[in-house]
Image 1 (cartoon, rainbow, N blue to C red):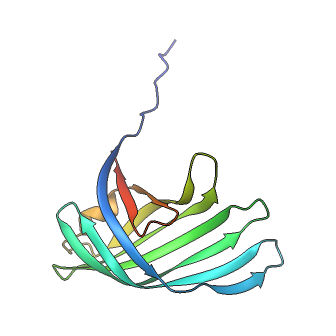
Image 2: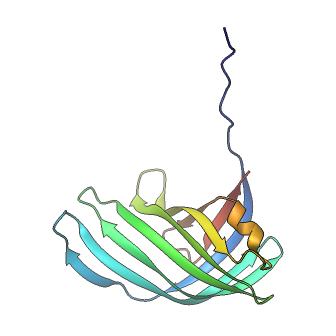
Length: 143
């Protein structure tokens, strides 16, 4: 009989701090499949950590407010780094008002040019959290 192997337990390491500048939401309204859809554009902001600095040069968040009060978020942020590299940071998550946390939580990945200075980011996975009222999205690398 083979021994049962245990799944690895992920750890987290602080990676980046992003301060997105969000525009006012554009409300699409009630959609046919349920919920209320809105769009929030990203008009700038900062990105710093792990020896990298950059600025947000665009992006957006698509929000779907569900009947249970949870907002599903699809995020896409474009970062111009100080070394001239560009990357897209993207992912999904939710904005919620739960007893243990109020704010935004996302799972994030990166796309970057294979020969660019931030190509290594495309081989890593991240989670992020932004408490309600805070301007900072704290991003942690999954280790």
